[in-house]
Length: 361
Image 1: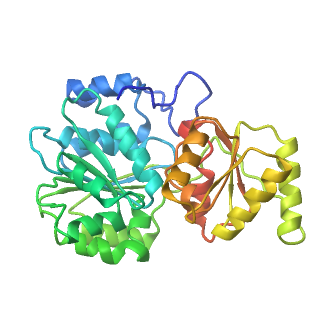
Image 2: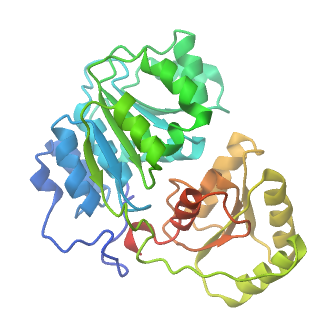
């Protein structure tokens, strides 16, 4: 699989979040020639600041806490480390990447495959809910890198179908969410099944203090901390505005419709706090504006992936979503994010707004 997935650095202005001005290239990281070729074919030319600082430490085998603003290249960091860790001659899962949502898992798997396009015999698969179990069992027979959501991973491990004894690298993507109450019990169970000698990489744009302490004290061994923008996690290329609206749903809907009619944008994400409100809002916007897509946990897996594919393929301009799309999703042309409902916490706000301004735009 060879195609360009990197953002074009010369196409638009880029902020200092990704453009550090130094004359650094991926060739200086002492990567294997096959991984370097995969990076070039995928469009990666110049590493971002987080890639410059984190990749060399990861290649030295350190456990890593990687914190950087949304859309500044964290996925590339652990994808490169995963590819350098794998021995394609060993037919076992050697790298395990945990993601909080199915959508992030599928996107991450695609990134690893693109960067690993020059590694003959490499097999990277996503293991997510909503997919028939027999399909996953077929994939396991040849899998080197597994990108998984917690529910399906636990199902495969506890049934004895997936053995973790040869995992040498574990990645916790969106680590603050993976260490939240929804996943912590399952993560603790999995931890006891993993080899003690593994390398662990945890990545996120946000690390609440309690999560950071838990991560560093329980799950990592003398980790190297690479934290860029921790004091000011808002993206430099994103302007933030608010509109005060009197009234409830219908008043906010009227203001949103006016905004979308008069404000120029390429693509827009509108976030709401519940599945029911997401469906209601998307239906009303479709009647008034047309061409609106919906992304919600109430949808079937095929419907969810189709909505994302239309967004990334620029076949829709407006996507109404719950927080399923708040993290990790990379759609380069999204340049407007609307919080129809205010998020419940600051971290979610930062992740939502990070869907715009991708890679320093």
